[in-house]
Image (cartoon, rainbow, N blue to C red; front, side, top):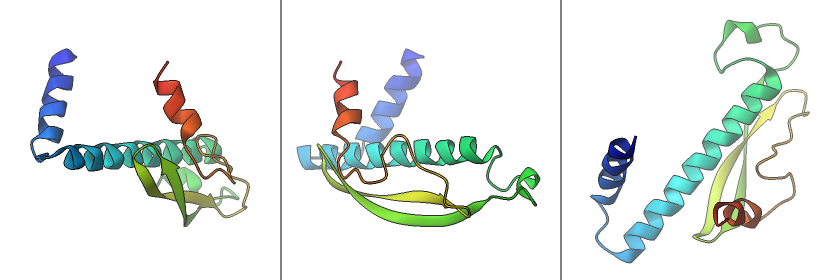
Length: 110
């Protein structure tokens, strides 16, 4: 496991030449992680994976995305919040009216 982490860190860091490059890489990694969590939350809410035939005639399905700009320790970050057709999906990782990710980032520091 440690070897895999070292390899991943080396691959991510190979394009970083300055501290600003590292910050941009961390910002991008944080955004991509949030996006993955949001997709997983919608999948759990709907009860089926994206493009699964289980979603056919299920009564609710994916309905695109809405953009949201959130403030993080790395600066402003745009994320795509997935939507469902019935309008019932409410993300837990980033609340509906939240504009910051301080709660998420503070949990990492514990």
